[in-house]
Image 1 (tube, rainbow, N blue to C red):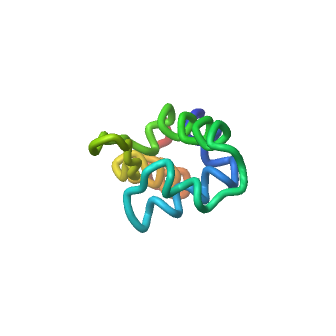
Image 2 (cartoon, helix red, strand yellow; image 1 turned 60 degrees about the vertical axis):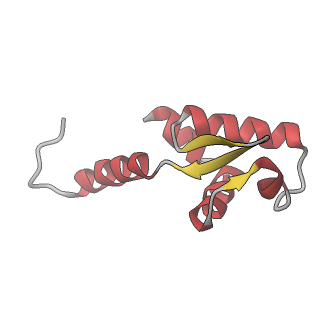
Length: 90
């Protein structure tokens, strides 16, 4: 979970996730929305991928990124469990 929260702590990475909510995107598609270099974008995408928040799929010459929705569901459930006092905390 620490890697997920680290990934979500950065506003640029949250913006990448917002973009991927709309559709799967290649690095080139994502890059069009940011002023930083492709190397910086690759670093952000790597952090998101290591946190398992995004998954990749090769389509021809391009790698497309998409949200890993099951991880978001797990995180949402974990957060909700903190506010549900009827459920024992692990």
